[in-house]
Length: 172
Image 1: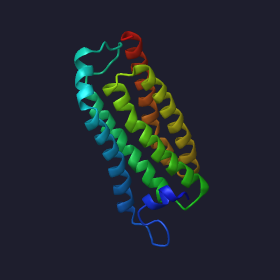
Image 2: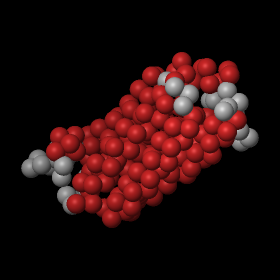
Image 3: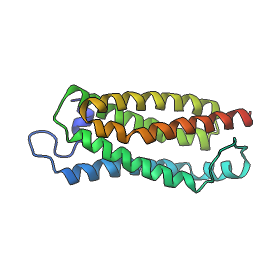
Image 4: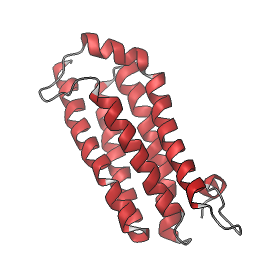
């Protein structure tokens, strides 16, 4: 296991893991990253709502924090399931990819909302989609349910890609 995830995993190593602490850790990490990203981007989000043309099928603003909150909780549950699995190369790589995609996810909102760099945000989202797909494939080798739990996230990112591309096109 890499040094990075080894230092993150509660109870990893020679001590027996506490399942509820592991779930709590990964859920709080995921939700915390999402909340911090939203907080950092809050002014840009307000400007976006007021002045940016949006593509058809754009949901009302209230939908986004609800959906993202659910997705971040599911991400945490999924990562916890993998974390609790016996050590393996797929587990280590999967959890490392989880942390990397979480960081990439965090940065998308400031790029899109604060910088309003819609083209860069779309390319960043393509990167995120690739990371999430790779993570799902690795998670599947460790815990099939953990992989399936990530499918709503992948689908939402695909929809977000449509919205991001539409915003980029409409606001050139």
